[in-house]
Image (cartoon, rainbow, N blue to C red; front, top):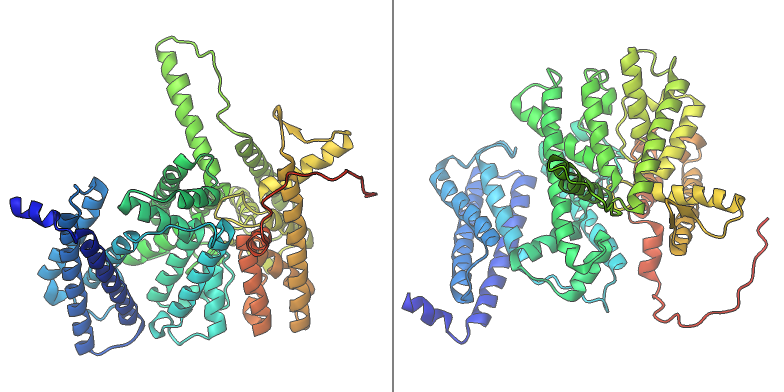
Length: 593
């Protein structure tokens, strides 16, 4: 014990700890790169055996470095850090025990070698999260950081999809970039069939890209950095407050924790429900598990990717209405937005504590606080109206067309699914090439509106459309402001809403014009459908995506990216922000009509 105290009092211990941490991080990074090499390329048994030895050696050094840092830090490690380190150590001991059985030919993640990959990735996450992720506002603003994080993960995803073992017969650079962008931007447009073209390794890469793109890579990185270090700079908290839409700085990491917890909980429950709804459509426990995992993440993140060639229109899934309902609920929840889900959670918590429990004690609650905020009320109301109105419209227009093969209950479910999926989900249970023109116009509107703010979906957002609609009535009534639920909508919200609407139409219009010039042989309606789908990150298509030329694919890539991060965010990142507005010019009215 006294020897440990002497070691802790060593004058170079902070520097020594820093050196150990840096060495361990670079070792973990090299190990992860070797994992991708291991999975991405064909190798001889000798090379594979050497790689396993290198993984185990890296984990051994990692466990030693973690232990040394505990000793030299002189502090009692927190419970959370202790748990993750125990997991890494346990996996290392387990891997040593099964050392002789690690060399397997299958690249799947459900074998003994998968435990080795898991240990290496946990080791890397632990070391990466120990680094200081403090962002200086004089170098980066939240918009620039948000855009950069998406660009970075898209480029990494493109490189990984180009690995030989990611596909069965190789893939071009433009198609890999398109697929990676579609996955990170949770769009769902594809140029090659996900299920047959990519191996399970390639599909796993797409799945990870969807999850990172849906929640946001910065949310993961910053939260886990705080998780391991237990602290963060004031500037980082300010930046993450803007990125997570938190009202208070002190609630930033609490909100991020709830976002991750809610996401993984919903995806876990959804995966279980999907697993038991498959029946005999998918055979084998491993295949069912992967199918369920892939589709629950793709659904909640509103990505629209599927391992089925024709999505849910595939025979065997077309009439699986329980599966359709589960997927619809998942992408509706994902499309509501994390602030809305958190606010609803707060409301029900308040309802139970302050309303239900006092009734058992015969107490009367006199104070009724404003728990459900204005943003939540607008989003929930607009989402309800769009779902019900869209379902009725879809049912009426397609009753004797694409819905003819379904039972009455099936018609209702398919109409509901058909109205919900255009709002950035991207799954299809019908053939969109057979839809009537009136139905296509309805889908155009639903795609353009999209999901809600701070969600995994795209589009101009439900609140933007709601504010624009309320502004119509406000002007017609002669009001100089928008009022709702005894509240006044802030002028900046109105200005932002109409800026988003104008920019969206401009981007979509330019995209349509460019693709028409590059692929003049394609139908204009199908091109417009493709561009609306790309901008709103929907993923629905009338079947022309793979037939487009490379320049047109690049246009769609740019459109998907702009739609995910929003053109307004790009402008904010590019233009210098005005710091002083302590003046005001005389006001003049401009003739409008």
